[in-house]
Length: 294
Image (cartoon, rainbow, N blue to C red; front, side, top):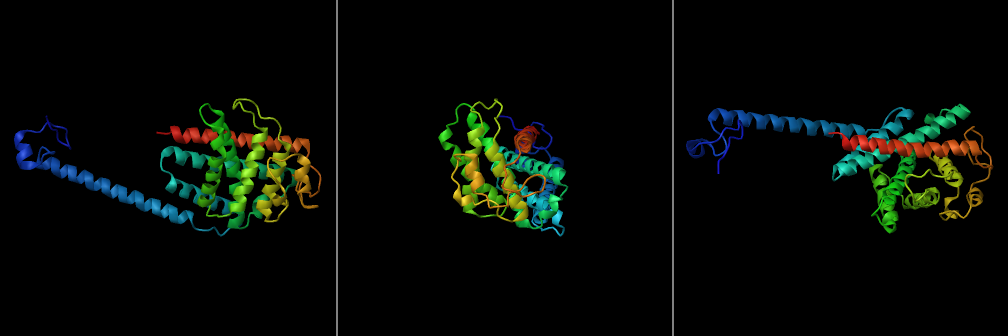
């Protein structure tokens, strides 16, 4: 069988195989080939060095309060990329985070538009930033697996196990560890499923209790104060009133910045629900762009 030079592609003769090297046709090709290898090794070393610098930079904590969410997002993305076994997982975990940012940014922007309060200033610690990202990402996990299991061939019995593992992974990437929060967000997922149609292409109905749960939890994340006695609740809820009864008196937050025991208005609920659904669209779009990118 004919052999060819690894450097120039020329077919090797008998003397090349005996006296020079079995895979190179001349001393010049050997020198050129070794130069290529050395350059490739230097490039690889430089890339690894740059990656290590980026990882170290992502783990630094910011000095300004408004930088905490961005720093924690960088940490999440770095750890997710390090842990991903393949491109699909890396793109999936990254798209969850970007969708999560979209939904929490929408909630903050909507509330700020109604009340004029700078909600970013409330995220004044890495713990608040982690909680905020965890809230947004878990919503994307629910949306992701709702679509995944709506496709044919995926047994729904395995869904909650997949969601649980995903929530644990999220905490790992955010450098968190709280079993109670994982269980709470499994409850959020069950409530979410109550409102999502079995047909992935059908329009989701209005989800008043889920939206209110999500919104009150959002305010808990940015203020660090407890609004809801979550331990009193079992999901899916029997009624919206059950959730309202678990809220601490006078603590419930509304987009206009006021606190009262009343329900969110229908108009606020509809807009907030649309924001959550549209953030899921952002997630899927980002996944498609990343996964299809050559």
